[in-house]
Amino acid sequence: MEQKNDVKLLRAWFSSYCTRVEVALKLKGIAYESIEEDLRNKSDLLLKHNAAHNKVPVLLHNGKPVVESLVILEYIDECWKNAPKLLPDDPYERAKVHFWAGYYDQKYMPSMIKILVSDATEREKAMEEFSEMLKVFEEGISRDFPQGTPFCCGNSLGFLDIVVGSAGCNYRAFFEALGVDCPVEKNEKYFSWIDGLRECPVMKDTLPPHDKLLAKIKEKFNLEPGS
Ligand SMILES: N[C@@H](CCC(=O)N[C@@H](CS)C(=O)NCC(=O)O)C(=O)O
Image 1 (cartoon, rainbow, N blue to C red):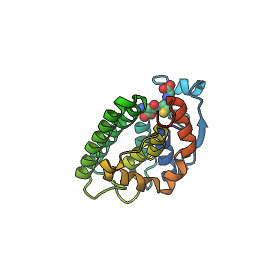
Image 2 (image 1 turned 90 degrees about the horizontal axis):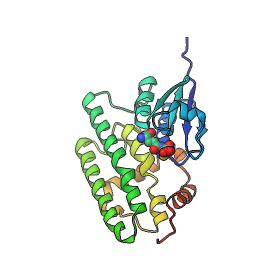
Image 3 (image 1 turned 30 degrees about the vertical axis):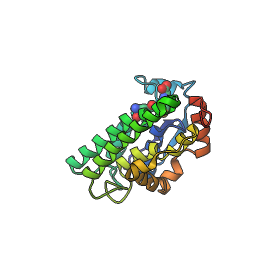
Image 4 (image 1 turned 120 degrees about the vertical axis):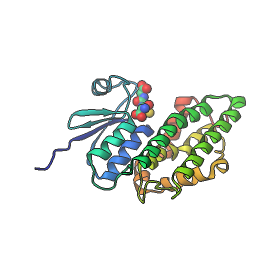
């Protein structure tokens, strides 16, 4: 008998954590219902199913909640074992993917937000720190995945591509909101990976529209170009 799969995703359109989950669901060919949350007026469903953090994304699989985007990605990979696989089979390869996904998860958005909230004098330093953080990341990725990026887990989007691409592919909107150039020349390997990921059909189809995201970032961080 075929197993019933009722999949719902509580999400917010601008959240890169939600983009991760949607990309994984699409890659796996899993049909799901997307439920948009108003994070200023959270639904009872969200508060009930993510009582610990009150955050999106929340995946509801046959009514059972799974929270935290990295946990959800692994859950999806384990439940829907059919191709394409997101994580490698080899335990050591998998450990490396988890390590770098965790590194990126902990460092990327805080580093980007530091640039967004700093005044003109602090911004240069924040941008230096951003580039240094990405340097550590790209050197680590090159060392640990010598077969190269993109698709560092094989020949289709893997766990790390999804984690990195869902947040990283929006970098133009963040720098445009600030009215400054992104120092891509300092991290060429990273940005060429990102630019490749953005061209993948499933990424293109899932990332938030540039202009809508730009307006959201300006509103959230109270930014005017050149400020
Ligand atoms: N570590 C969480 C982060 C999720 C997260 O920060 N979600 C934000 C949207 S981008 C949220 O729901 N914020 C609501 C709030 O903080 O009240 C994950 O990976 O799922």
